[in-house]
Amino acid sequence: MIRFEQVVKTFPDGTTAVDHLSLEAPTGKITVLVGPSGCGKTTSLRMINRMIDPTGGRILIDDQDVMDVDAPKLRRGIGYVIQHAGLFPHRTVADNVATVPLLLGTPKAEAKERAHEVLELVGLPGDFADRYPAQLSGGQQQRVGVARALAADPPVMLMDEPFSAVDPVVRDQLQDEFLRLQSELGKTIVFVTHDIDEAIKLGDQVAVMRVGGKLAQLAEPAYLLAHPIDDFVSDFIGRDRGYRALSFTESPRLPLAPEPSVALGATVDEARAATGDDWLLVVADGRPQGWIEPERITAPIEQGMLHRGGTVATEHGPLRAALDAALSSPSRRGVIVDDDGKLLGTVRAHQVLSAIERADRPEVHEEDIAPTESVGEAAP
Amino acid sequence: MILTDTWKWLVDGANWSGTDGILHRLEQHVIYTLITLAISCLIALPLGSWIAHTGHGRWLVSLANAVRAVPSLGLLCILGIWASSHISGDLALTGPSIAVLVVLALPPLLAGAYAGVTEVDPAARDAAKGMGMTGAQVFAKVELPNSLPLVFSGLRSASLQVIATATIAAFLGIGGLGRFLLDGQASGEYQVMIGGSVLVAVLALLVDLLFALAQRYLVSPGLTGRRVRRHTAGTGTGNLDPATNLDGEKATA
Ligand SMILES: Nc1ncnc2c1ncn2[C@@H]1O[C@H](COP(=O)(O)OP(=O)(O)OP(=O)(O)O)[C@@H](O)[C@H]1O
Ligand SMILES: [Mg+2]
Image (cartoon, rainbow over all chains, first blue to last red):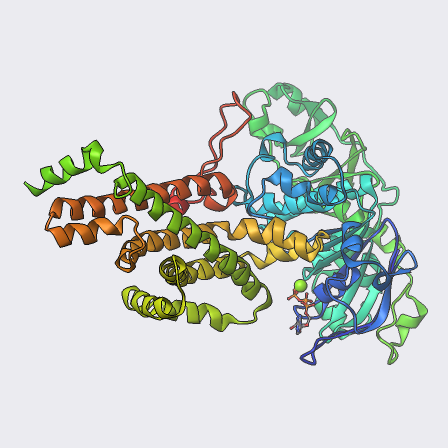
C-alpha cells in the first residue's frame, strides 16, 4: 500500500505542483491519477520513487517513509514506466529490459533469460530482443518500457502515461493486455493519464486532480461516473456518463427468448424453413456468426454473406454490452452467449432497459451529498 | 619529372633507414601525435563531460573554440622563443611543441565530449536514474556510451589537426615528417618536399581509418543506425523494417 499524507511539492521557482495531497493506493490494485495537463500528476508519481522530493508531508510504502530509504535502492524495488518509454538507445531491447535485474546483481545469463520471459509477457516475441529501440514502432517501444519495469518483478509499479504515444486502436489493445497482465500479476500500480476514458477503463480507483495539485475526488470508476463531486469533475468526466456507467453494472438475469438459428452451410430451403422472421441467426459450433435474410439468399449460407453489424454480449457481462447488442442487431434482437461463446438466446432493448431501471446505482457516500470546503478529502 | 622523382625517392630503401630516414621521422611524428592526443584526452574528455553534466564553465568550451582561430605557426614560434630562454635541454624544443599541439587538439575534443554528453536523450538519463542507477552508473552506463559518436568525431578531427600541425613543429627542430619539407626546400630537392607531404597525408588517412574502425567497434549500432546483424539465422526475416531503420551510413561518414 502506498499512502500520501498531506504531501506538498513547491518547486524552487515557487510553483506549487502538489498541494496537500492525501490518498491511498491499495495493495494489488490500480490507482489512476487523472487530471488536466499541469495538475501535478507526474510530480505526484515521481515523489513515490524519490525522483522528486516532497517539500511537505510524507509518502509511505507499506508504512515505510520513502525518504528513509536510499534513493537508488528504493528505485530498484519499484517498477517505473516513463512517459514516452525513455529506452536506452545504445542497448538492445533485451539489455534494456535486463537493466534492473543486472543492477540488483542477477547473473548475466539469468537476467537475459528473465528479459526474454518478460518480453514474451508483454507480447514481444523472441526476435525483438536483439533489436535496438530505434528499430521499434512507438507502440513496441512502450511495451518494452513496460517490460523493463516488470523485469525485476517489483511489487509496486509507477506508470506515467505509458500508452500515450500510440493510436487509439493500439492503445485499446495495450490497455486490454495490461488488464490481462495485471489480473495475473496483481501489482500495486499507480497509473498516470490525462485521458479520463483510460482512467475509467483501467482504474480500480480513480483520483481526479485539479490544476494546482489538489485532489478533487477519489472514487471507484462507476461511482465517479454516477456521482461526480462538483462541476469540475463532471466537466472533466465528460458526456455519456450514464451510458458509460453501464460498463460497470453486471447484467442481472435477463429474460432471454430462444432464437432460431441455422448452421453455416445450410441451404436456402433450410434457412427459410427455420424462421418466419426477416432475419435469421447463423451459428457455427453453436457460436453466433452473423445474421442473414432468408428471403434474399439464393445459395447455401457462407461466411461472406453474413451481416456482421450486430455485437454479442455475454450472459453475465456489463449491461452496456447487452444494451449495445440489442441496439446494434439488424433484427433488434441482441445476441447473448455464455462464457464459451455459445448462443443462449436473444434479448430486446426494452428488456435491457427495464433491467437497467431495476439495477442498483452506486450508493451516494454521505460526505459527497453536500460538498464542503474540504474537497481534497476523498471518498473511501 | 617531379612525380617520378618523388616516387623514386619514396621507394628508395636507403631513404627509409638511418636517423634521417623516413622510418625514424615517421616514428617521431607518430609519437608526438600520440603523446599530444593522450594528454589532450585526459584533459578534455573529463572536463567536457563535467561541464555538460553540471552546466558549470560553459565559457571554457567557447574559449577553446576561440583559441582555434590563433595561427598555429605564430603560437609555436612565440612558445618556442619563450621556452628556449627559460628551459634547457631537449624539453626546450619538445615541450612547447607538444604544448601547442595540445592547445590545438583540445577544442575539438572538448566540444565533442561536451556535445556528446549534452545531447544524450534526457528521457534516457531520467530512465537510468529511475531504474535505480547511481550518479556514477548513469554516467558510465548511459551518458558515456551515448556520447561516443560525438567524442569520436572530436577525436578524429583532433588527430588530423595534430598530425598536420606536427609537421610545422619541425621548424623548432624537433624532427618528424616536417623535416623533409624543410630539408627539401633548403636543398632544392622538391621530390623530398612532396614525398614528405605525401607521407603526412598518408599517415593522417591511416590514423583516421584506425579511429573509424575503433568507432565502428565501440559505438553501439543502436546509435549509428548501422544495420544490425541478426543472430537468429535461418528465419529469413533478418531484414529490418526500412521505415524505422535509421540512415545506414550517416554515422560512419
Ligand atoms: N522542475 C520544475 N520546476 C518548476 N515547476 C515545475 C517543475 N516540474 C513541474 N513543474 C510545474 O508543476 C506543475 C505540475 O507539473 P506535472 O509535470 O506534475 O504536471 P502533469 O499533471 O504531469 O501534466 P501533464 O499531463 O502535462 O504531464 C506544472 O505547472 C509544471 O509547470
Ligand atoms: Mg506528466
